[in-house]
Amino acid sequence: MWVNGTRQFVLPRNTNATLAQVVSETYFTCLNRGLIQELAAHFVPLACQKSITVGGAHAFCAGPLDIIRQLESLKAMVVQLKGVLQQTSVAGSILVITTGVCLSPQQAGLSFCHTLTLIPRASDGAGGVGYQIQNDALCFLSNEMPAGAV
Image 1 (cartoon, helix red, strand yellow):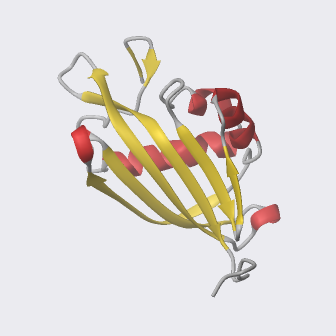
Image 2: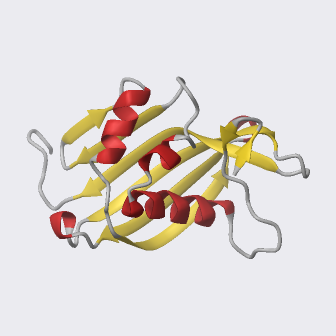
């Protein structure tokens, strides 16, 4: 939903879903359908951290263009969500943790853990609060031990 010129996650009224469920489903649907610009619009401008970890390899984003490039690398990813939970955090932020399995041919069977920190933004005008992504960490879980692991 667009609120005050920014793209925000807002929990629809009359739903049994949690904000975490709405955010996770939106995030992975956008990736699968290649809606990268739409997904990137949900990130806090210029103040966001994003990373991907695969085994012992980490890729961190240095800015908005890196975030888009990293999201592009995940385009068409198909996942099966296994668990989604949320916890309230500092200053009204919400921690979202999602686990699942990739079904895409290039990552088939690879489990993942995805963590988002959502921060509250301006009201949606109907008394609800909108949220944007402040931090995004996606970790693909492999059975390989990183070099130097004990």
